[in-house]
Image 1 (spheres, helix red, strand yellow):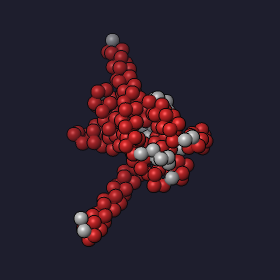
Image 2: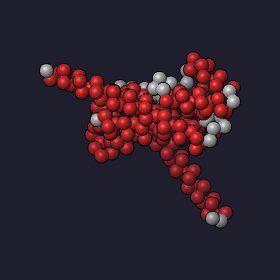
Image 3: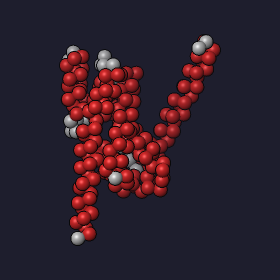
Image 4: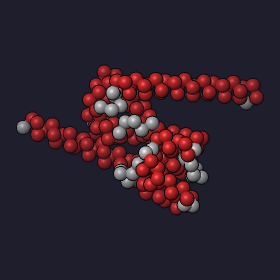
Length: 203
């Protein structure tokens, strides 16, 4: 690829990035004002009329809520199960959250510490920032363990990992292997709970 073509390619990528950012920002503003990021019933009502586009929009929302954690993860899981069923909700959650986790990691690599202070409370920041003082091997073990646990602040930890020397390959492997357990616990568990509640109401 010659210099001219490379420059044109970079310009196209930059334009796509800017357009993507603006569309995401517009959607976040819309979601905030309509309440779909804060209320389970409104998010469900938003997804249902979308038909075959609903899974793509849902995965996009799940990815965004990792990068900009304004929607509690549990709400997304509940709505996913209610709209798509437990099995499909698991895969849609898994794909969306993994993409969002990767984006958070890449953003932290570029932005650094300010990204952590923007997306986390002071309590969470102070609790985990000390992990950066460990050597890389120790941090990798702590991060891997935390990702496998469904109670850890995964969004923040993805940003934190982006500030270390962890490679994107290793990060991706940890996320792909560690996320299914927590997501399955939410998606399948909630599916069983909703099914039992439905049966109780019919009795």
